[in-house]
Image 1 (cartoon, rainbow, N blue to C red):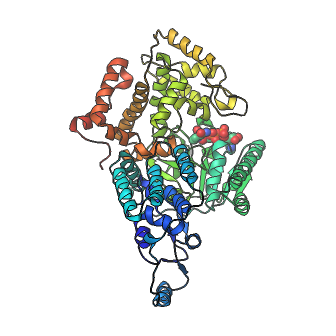
Image 2 (tube, protein in one colour; image 1 turned 90 degrees about the horizontal axis):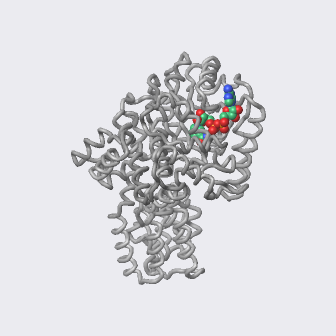
Image 3 (cartoon, rainbow, N blue to C red; image 1 turned 90 degrees about the vertical axis):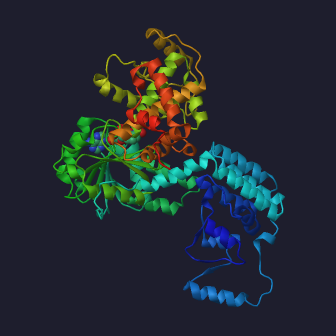
Length: 594
Ligand code: NAI
């Protein structure tokens, strides 16, 4: 970052062989504002500079040498090598100065057009990449001194912008999340050398890849040989796709595949340090599996469950070692999504939590440590979010309008398109399980259940809220669903009306915020920023808005609270303001203190 910018102001740059060089400011919603956008193109050419500045990704010393970013790689003792270099150039009278160099550009304007279109597509809503591009473009159009002025002006504008504040919030949130209050200082993690995953379905297969990718051997245990065969072909297919995209070499794939062993025998669990259960989301199946794990695994091995919503304390109670039981909740696809929700049970031992946090870091995950409740943090908040989406459908919206309004807000996907992707049967099962606990007087949307009753479970059955052409994932509006929604509304005596996008966004996002406030107050989440991390990294909430609670802070809690009160009056009990929100709004407070 700033160090490299300083070095670019020098005549020469030397690096040891292991140096990584980057201008990562874009990741914090900024741009290199100390001359970096003007000097780097003069040193390595506009095209390579654009790539480094817009991606923020590092190059290693060898690549930096090829690009001309550094002059020499110093092997051996750094000081000796540097002094030798200094002696060699000491007699030179004309030393190179980056700012005086002219810029080379082979492809004319096209690289900027291409870069803008790529940034708009892959980093939708982010300002900083576009400003980075404008600055590199300015390095060609303007003399150096004027280029610096342009860069400074763009930098200051980004620095004051809400997006950079949001990204900086997430940067610190990620580091803060690994600190767990109440964990005795010096809690030593247990060594994890061998891992097993039980259940080689969608999640189990992805979780196995997380470990193989980090070089950790993993055994995948199944009850059915056909499931094991399917998992093996999924693994090969996923890795082959990475090779095709140029992300991994064939040799790396081979090595990773060798680290994953399939098995039908629970006996293979005897020596593992950690086992993660990812079998069907059914309490009786989970109980049976944990009883077997308890009987089979060596003392001290960690028994984890990937359950999305079930009570981890009840699972732990089926074992003779509840202190070793923990929730490790991965998100789908597990090898891609960066979030790991670590769910501590009432009896989980401190070192089991510490081990899980350390392990998450080894496999490149972002963590949030949460407590036990229905759906933990992420899925518990999803419930009111989806509830409002269902109500909005009944009151007058169509799926495509709800999804587009939230996509335009910045969500990676709209809630109904996400449900079609995840499988509508999964949430249907959870609703059925919880139906007896639902107070009868509370409003309930029947739309989702009706869709499931038609056997429409989303993309996997070719239809859900939308229909899908064979082999396509593009959601197409379906008149049959429009009619179904109208019928549900009529049955509930609802007169449909025109609903604006702003109402859609407020009702869904404020529902997240209100539930987030309750979770915080209940102590299920340790801090507001953990909830923000969960939503950004697990649920596609736009990072440049900082997460739902940070977003609420930027809107102003008094405004959020007064809108929620209004919704409470109009729509009843579901919208009862969370006491914490009420208190903070009254005090002029915030969820996140920054
Ligand atoms: P899945 O149905 O794709 O896979 C479950 C696998 O477990 C099947 O291959 C089945 O043969 C195997 N299995 C069942 N009983 C077994 C036993 N006794 N021993 C060994 N293997 C057994 O299910 P999926 O979607 O992978 O979900 C697994 C768990 O992960 C569930 O608890 C689910 O709630 C949770 N989860 C699912 C997410 C998703 O998006 N699918 C996201 C996060 C968590």
